[in-house]
Image (spheres, rainbow, N blue to C red):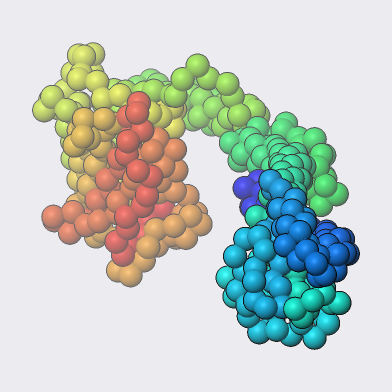
Length: 467
């Protein structure tokens, strides 16, 4: 915008200055030519008076003396820097510098004084001198272009300097105006960027022209509305999660009342895990949307997958499912829960990774028959930055022609399970791919970016759907 304003101002100023200064320069040139012509004409008439007296005095007994006097007058008229002055006598003799006997000279012999512009440039002043012996003499004054337009170069340079000064002033004024407009616009863009990054406390300072001040006011109003709506939604989510505490407490009491201690302990552990999940939902709903961190989040994908697979293993055994978990080093993640694994650092929160793995496994348990096998595999990304999680099952696969998306399920659920996985991968700079496994079941491949975030965030889906 600033450059456009400068270009428009420069073009407009140049046109205005050209419309004003070019006529002024031409007028000054014409005035200089007229002044030089008038001066030459005045000198010609003065010379004609003296020349007539000299030639008349020498027309009697001493014509040579009269011509000598006339020659002296012509010589005096040809001083340094003066136009070339000649006298053409009636018999064709030329006193002073050579001068052609043209048609204009012959016309002047009839007693007419005039000025004309010869083909070679400049101007010529012709003044007749009558009443002398030998016929009418003609004073011939030739004015060159350098004498005709003497002093016009300085005036033209003055006009050019004036135009350049006005141009600079116009550009300085336009630059200040453009800086004000651009500065106000950039400040609005900065506030909008902060709002987009989750800083709902950002507000714009109204500045600049009235239109930008109006936009700043509306942007502040929009930020306040977004903050109020988001606060209400988060409080509602926290309240709904808090309401689950009462049925969870009753479920825990029922679990403690079971006669089988092992069964009571197992169900109690599941209820405790569910309570922790509810508490995490409440904390997540009520924490600020934007938190200052010293760096991007990091988690070990291999460790999280191993931990969640071990959590789901008892339920898989109860349902007769074969649950396999392959880690980057080729080991079975369910064999030695205490052994160290090769870490696969990814740019994601550990709780979000755990929720994504639980969503994938819960999806398999909810939408495939008991006894259906499920396989998890963790590997490093092909470029060495980030990790890949692949979950396959031996079930019927995704319904034909159904694309998984938020709020839409092919299995009669809420449609939010796979969206949790998609959101976790995208926030980590990764991708999610929904395909079919070699055996016909469903395959979900989630890519998670590493610390440098080189993985692009995009979705690749094939027909199918599951929540």
